[in-house]
Every structure is written in C-alpha cells, then in structure tokens.
Length: 418
Image (cartoon, rainbow, N blue to C red):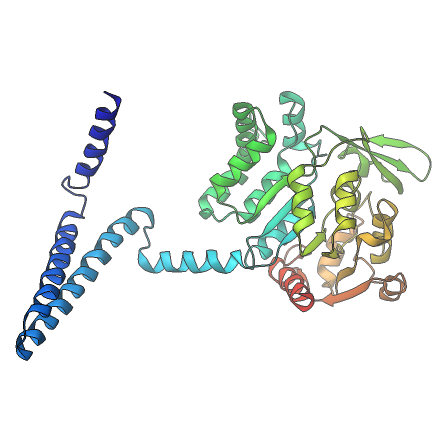
C-alpha cells in the first residue's frame, strides 16, 4: 500500500511539469524530437551507401543536435528565471564569484564591535573562507537588556559581523540593522538582535541560532562566538580599584593595568579552535583593545590554539585612542597590552595607518579626548615585530578604517607569504 502511494506521488510530481504555464512542455517536446531525429538519422547514415544520402543524414543529425541544444537551453532558462530573476548572466556571475571566493585564503579574525565588522566587509570580497571569532562579553544597550531578560549570550557584536559578511540583498541587511525608536516598547532594540534571540529560544541553542541566522543572510564565511559560557569582563586600574562589566569599564576614566574574565575558567568554542588550527592568517583587531580584542585571548583554549598555529599573526592597530580605555596609548603600547595578556608570540606583523587626519576632524575628536595613535615604529621593530604602513582610513565624517584599503593590505601580505 505504501509503495503504491509512493509511486502515485512520484507520478503526480512528474505530471505537474506538464501543467499549463510551466513553460517547459514545448521545450521538452523539442528535446524529445531532437533526440529522436539524431537517433534515426545516425542509424540511417550507417545503412545508406550513397554519398549524397549520407551527407543528407549528417545535415539532419546536425539539425537534431541544434534543436536539442535549443530545447535544453530553454528548459534550463525556465528554471534559472524562477530562482535567479537576473537570468543567465547573473547566474554566471554568481557561480564565478562563488568559485573565486572558495579559492581565497583561510582567514580567522578575532575581536568584536564595529572595528571587526569593517574589516570583514572588505575581506569578503577576496575570500569566503573567513571565520570571525567574536567576543560575547557585551553587557550594554540592546545586547545587555536581552542578556538580562532572556538569559542568553549578547547578540550585538555577532549581529554586526553577520551583516558585514552577508551576501543577502541590501534590504535584508538593513532589516537586521533596523533599530526601533523611542516611541516603541522595543525602543533601542535592533531587529537582528531580536531575531537571534527568538531563534535561540526556538532552537534552545545560541550557537545553532547564529548558524541559522547565517543561512538567512547567506554570509560568506562563518561567525563564531568565542565561548558559549556566560562571562563578564573585570578591569583592574592603576590605582588598585576594580570594575566589572564591559560598558562600565571605560566609564571610570582610569588607566587600566589588567583585565580578566569572570569566571576565569571557560571553554572556547570548538568551531573557533578548529578554524584557528586551519587558518593561513589570524587577525587581531581593529577594535576596542581591552573590551573587544583582549577578552578573546583570555580564553585559554583560543590563546593556545593561536600560539600553536603556523598562520601569519597580524595585529591591526587602532587609528584613534579610545577615551577611558587607551588614553595616550601609542601603537607599541597597544601591542604591549596584548602580549602581557597572552604571549609575545601572539603577533608577527603590526598594520598601522600612515595617513594624516584633517585638522577639522582632529578638533572634533579632541572634544571627546580622542587623539591619533602615535606610530612608534622603532619600538615595535625593536620588540621583534614587523610593521606594515599604509593609508588605511576613510575620514570623510568619522575617522575609521576603510574596509577596502585594509582588506587589500591584509590579502597582499598573505599572498606574499604563501
């Protein structure tokens, strides 16, 4: 009985192809006619002895081949136009881009915040073999509220990286970044954060929720939480005082001497460890030194995986100092903080910006006590690290890394070493 029902379902699915409006019947008919024409004319070719008869059947065979190609092409076009509105040309571009990106270098980025998402936007144009290892210590804004109310990991930095790697239409990216205004009960929340939260509740697993969200946005690469444990950041200042909470740490406006995780003994995500072990390049930053970059390195398994890797280890220095976190820090002092919290072997190269910032923008940033990071190249080189200088910023309205310029320097560096 089951077999009969199964056979009936198969028959019905086949019949559906011949429903009106499917735009395949005529081309299937043409293809069948062409195959029959080729078969019959080929058979007659070997029977006939006359030169002219054989020549005629050769022409008929060629006609059959032409009609067969025409029928097959139009059948495929009917399918393509359903799934790819842009048609054959767009499909070719999609296939070429996918195959090109699949051959790109294997890159792991480590960090969080907007700095990491800027880098990812540029890298995805060169490779789809990207793994973004993202901190989950955020406790402010929408992420902080979701973390408290729903007892899940903060989704904000994860969301930014997902959107940065997205290959989905622009409208879908804007949807994930859409933030509700103050007139709503959802004030301050972004749609993407809520989407990941709902997906976590549906699947019962934050990691799975991130993977499912990745499919929705069709991202190039993968976004991986550095840990699935619930953690908070704790900072110790030069005056001996202590502050817990990522958001509160820079608000103290004091010099940070040490930062650690609470609880200290947490596990790194297996996917993150695997990606690091297979990487050709591991990139730290750009991003907030103490609240985005270093927290990932405090996870023992991730730190040890990076140290054990033979990949190029690249640190991208911030362009501007961050008030309450890196006041007065030079590029070398950024590096010093990283190696003091991990190991001197955690970095091979340091990428720094050499472009001057306009006086108008400098004055704007000075009002917030933010200044260009001094590039003390001699100190960096004396410590054993190689320095890559370049024009890396886009400073029209804000001083930020330019995703295209930054990605090109990183890709060029990788290609020089592999």
